[in-house]
Image (cartoon, rainbow, N blue to C red):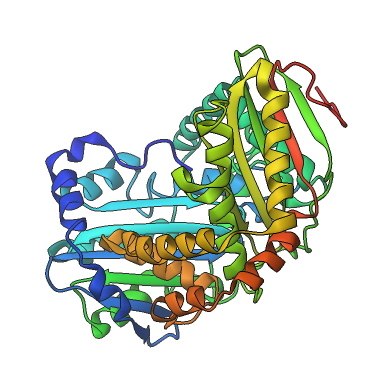
Length: 448
C-alpha cells in the first residue's frame, strides 16, 4: 500500500470533498440496483441525489497471493505505483490532473484482493474516470518512480524490524501458513522487495487486472445509464480473463505452540489465533456472535473484562474473525508488561477454554445481538463506506438483499447454536506469538 495516496497540495478541495462524503444517508443503502454495461461488466449502484458526488470502489480477486515465489511485495508495489503516471502523463502531470479536479484515487492490495477507489464531484466525473482508466490500462512504471516508491517501502519495512506488533503479526502468519502464500508478508520483505523488476510489475497487472475477476460498486449522484457508460469506459480495455496462478487450500499449522521472539522492549506484544469459520458456513453468524462475546465487543467482551478490568494486565485486548478465499481464522492480540506476559497468555487461553466448554449466557447473546444489529448502520453513513460495503458483500457472495436479511439472520441464532459453535470455534487450540522479553512464558516451541 502506498504510504501517501493523497498529496496535501489539493488542500481545501480535499476537505470539501471529504465533507460531502459524510452526508450520505444510510437509508439509501438498501436501494441497490444491479447494473450491467454493454460489455457485460456488472456493478451494484446506490443512487444518492442529495450531494453532487460519485464514489466507486472495486476489487480484483488475486491479491498478494499472486506475487511470484521469492518476490513477495509485487502486488503492493503495483498498488503504490498505478497513480504515479499513466499514458502520456508522468507522475507530476498525473497528480496535477487529480488535484486540479479534487479527485481522490487510490489502490491497495491484501492477501486475496487488489482494491481501488475513486471519489469525484459529479462535474469532474469525466476527468476522474479517464484518469482511473489510464492508471489501470496504461501505467507507466517509470524507473525513477519505481525506485522512489521502492525506497519508501524498504524504509517502512526497515522500521518494522523493530516494531513488536509487526514482528508478532508476521511471525504468527508465517508460522500459521509456512507452506502457503498466506504466510508471506503482503508488503514483501527486505530481501524480496529489492529484487522486484519493472517486468514483474507489468506481468502482475496483465495477469491480475482483468474483467472476469472484477467486482464494482458505485454510490452517488448518477443513474444506471451513467454507470453503464463508465463501466465500459474504465474497465472495457482490460483483458477479458485473468491469468491467476492456482492457490490451494490453506490449513493452519503449529496449533498449541508458543513462539517467543526476543526483543529489547519494555512491553510484550501477544498475538494469538486458531482456525476460524468460513463466511459461507451455516455456522458463521453464530461464530460472529461468539467472537463478539469473547473479544470483539470492545468494552463489553469477556477478554476485556478479565484481562483489563479485573487485573489491569493490558490497555486493550481483542479478537476477530478473518475469512479469506482459501482459509478462515480466529485471531486476536494484546500488549502487556513483559513480566506479566505469562499470566496474560494463560488467562486468555483460560477464558477461551471456558467459553468453549460452557458457551455464552443468554444475557451475553442478547447483548451481542443488539449491538451487532444496531451498530451495522455505522458502516453506511458515508458514500465511501457504502461503496466499500457493497464490494465486500459481492466478494462474500451474500446476495444483493443481504443488508435487509442480516438482522433476521442474527435473530435466528439460538443459545444452543452459539454454545455448539463456541466449542467448534474455540476448542482446536491456539498458536501464540510473544514478542519482547517476557519472563518464562510456558514456552512449548521457542524460536528466537
